[in-house]
Length: 280
Image (cartoon, rainbow, N blue to C red; front, side, top):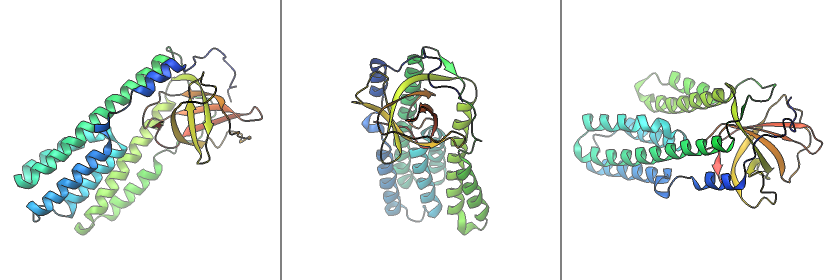
């Protein structure tokens, strides 16, 4: 296991750079809630305007699209136009227009969110001044995404009769999320990653909060995420105060990260983000 204090000249994520990163966040209009409301309104309009044109599969597709909007905005950039084209082709205009408008709201919000993520990654990489290092060894076997892939495949396999089409849609949604999570986790392991010195603190809900390296009072958290300790890492004792850590990876909403810190006895602690990064 690499020692936390070597090398000692790794770049710090200083307050001025951290403030610029924190200021780069999605606009209020791009929040997924608006896409969810638009999809709900479109479903209600379709039920009134053309109830015979929409069946359970159509509403299932709307639910899957909403799930991807929340979890995989990048995938929404592809699925929303495809679904809109299918609606224009197969559904009567009075029912298709509200649904296409809702999908346009989803697509616009997803495009804005993915653009913000790219800018956040660039700001974090610039703060690292080009310093990139491989993840500390040893690393546990890569299991991220396997649960979603297995669940998705099981649901798809169970959805053979036509009446279980909704199971297939749920299976596809889970499968896509699992594959995406596995790809992000695998990308973190390949090659060097931007490295920044930060401060971290855990709360009572097992979330880790990340602060700028010079925010010794812990006044402004940058983001939080749940973490999975690497099983090969000595457990040690965790303290409740701020502690220095190395952040591997470029943080953004939903990013895959790894934190290397020290416990209260000086032993190494390796934590991998176990859920989406949430800006504070």
